[in-house]
Length: 170
Ligand code: HEM
Image 1 (cartoon, rainbow, N blue to C red):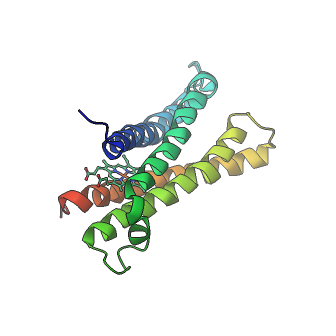
Image 2: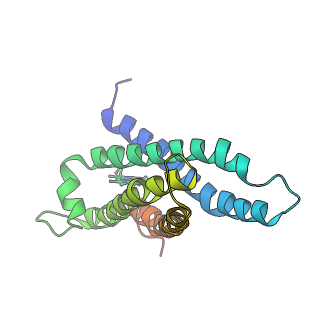
């Protein structure tokens, strides 16, 4: 047995990728509807415990997994980074670079959404930083739109990322 950085990094990329996108789907398909149901249920326990005990932990794993996915993915690209991010337009590129490049761009946009649009706004929503009721209302809209966008982008991202080595499914 011999250590392979590339294989190790690929494994880290898969682990962090499923952690990131798994939590993204948890937010969109479970937590957001659950918060809505808890708010609507006047006799129920309310959404406070989700906001206090669950959401901060989920967000912690979510944002750091996003960063690890990006860096492990970029490390996998290595010398192919330019060819991929130029979507295969550079000299000597192949279809692999176009496909992985589309996936890499989508992932990069999604990383931006996580760290610039979702996390700073979630801090206001969850009361981790001071914010007025108006600022919190705006933060909710921005964070939700960014989260929904990432959920949509994750679908073509996975298709192109897999297609680079294994072909397009359609
Ligand atoms: C954020 C930017 C990203 C970059 C730069 C990137 C880069 C890469 C690269 C270069 C590969 C090919 C590995 C190889 O040829 O051995 C790859 C594969 C893969 N990536 Fe990403 N990735 C990113 C985001 C993601 C995300 C968010 C996911 C979600 C789970 C993901 C899931 C995968 C999977 C499942 C494969 C395996 C595909 C295969 O076996 O052919 N990646 N990624």
